[in-house]
Image (cartoon, rainbow, N blue to C red; front, side):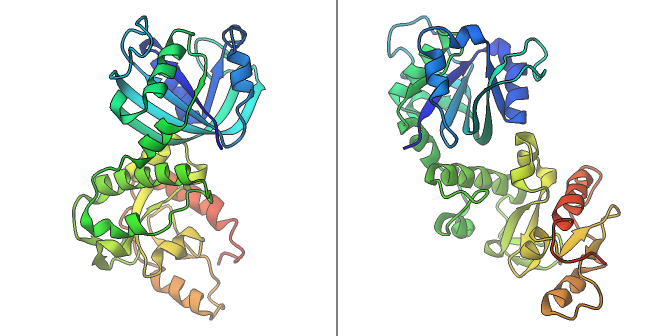
Length: 309
């Protein structure tokens, strides 16, 4: 079973917190890990284990279990992608923090109360606050509780509740649940409560269930900020456009025009589908989204097995 370690981040570390989360990396002073079981705890974390960061809680100089009903301004969950290593390259502006782990950020919530987590999780965060942000191991109950907390969804989004969801190829249940929550929040923010949605590629207006919220820049290649940027997502219909774009059969040029990556001489059915979209303007192309479409052109289409025309 995956381990989970809890790390408290104080108010005055907001700049470092933002940088670390956006770059998928966290670090400690060597002196911090050398105290008590600090190094042993972090060294025990393996790829696939979790870090739960709590930010801006109350005074930590209280009795044991004193944070049971506390309020945290922000809770971020990351999954370890590279266990403990030492690196002296500059990431944060104030210091090196050379003892590092790499994490994939899965969840980012604000205004979290103790009742949304587990009592032992809140106690672990309180202890971390008293240990200068050292990691403290505790149970995974809090992670499961947070993952199970659903955002309010529209009844039309029934496919999100029933269909299997994989995030970057993972079969980890908690990871999938956290990814689903992220997708639900983005979907609600992007689409609102509309029951009919228009595909950004083909322009067809279809029922909400037939519209996928597609990342333009691959989610697995995007930073935390980019994943949550509404300029990096668009409605792509399940009538074919979502897959054609995702697998690079079509792309959007710098002028916002959809192009086929399949040669005109290719008379296959997929070639015909791609050419039906070619020449149309993508409704989601803008000055703000162009950098994401540029990434799709350079990376996704480049890696396609089909030559570009």
